[in-house]
Image (cartoon, rainbow, N blue to C red; front, side, top):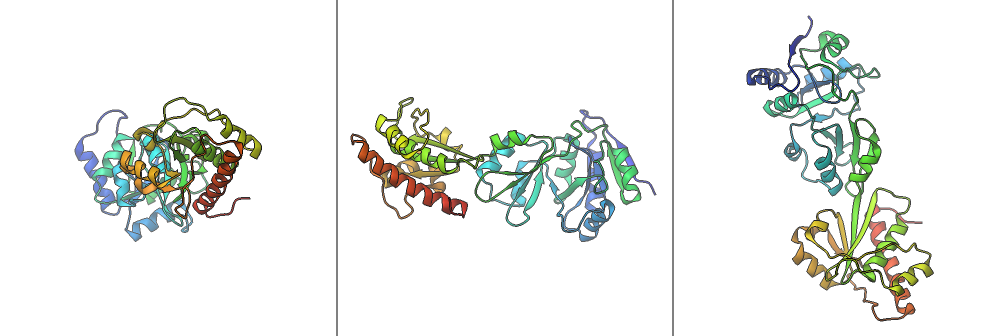
Length: 349
């Protein structure tokens, strides 16, 4: 028996009874082909082992490949996890709804996407539980660009097809794995380029001192040097009492040159809530800086720590000669190395 086909018009709100009917077919264990902006998706109710097995059989998909989830909006992520990293949050803000699948969590994780298709979003919201959605094609074949093509390829395996015309993008989603710590890793390039993912999905570390002209810019320069072959990281610096636009002190720059570390074109900036919102990890020089961070931006407190893992302070070299700055830089390098190795779970060369 051929699948029933329901036609809808892109950009025209379908009647609520149609949305409810499609959601009911999913809830009752049916396989439904739904439109998305990327390609058409083969969807089923999660948690129903029998219907999930039908998806694997219909596609010829290996059982060791978990099925992704389509969700109606970002709020639905909470059904699966409350551990949303900074890079994941920024990628969601930038690309959802849209052609981005995020793989979140340990081991194989859970793959989540918010499709940019209003009808499908409405169906996902109306369903009584989470919905799996994978491309509506046989494994190894090109994804279906319209509902009738999907129905022809999948045959009697499908119960209902929603036809909304050709998919707008005609490309699969870009898949990005989100680790517990660090930037997103592109697993597959689709509707979003790797460069766009890299730009939005960086893991940002901030170094904070008082005036942002000595310790924090030297520490940031050292950290960038350690991370030179890891482009997914971004390093910034700021000061609790900094003004805007001051240069690094000459002695700080001289110490970096002597150590063979590139001298940045640095301009000081104060620590603000706007800056804090873009940062995933904060390392400060002294306990007083840590107290100030927690008072100025309480939301940052869980991710703010002393640069010294043992709780020591890095003294301000301001007013000292090159030898004082060199000793300070050596301390900053060692502490930054310790923190970074602990963060990455690996030793640096």
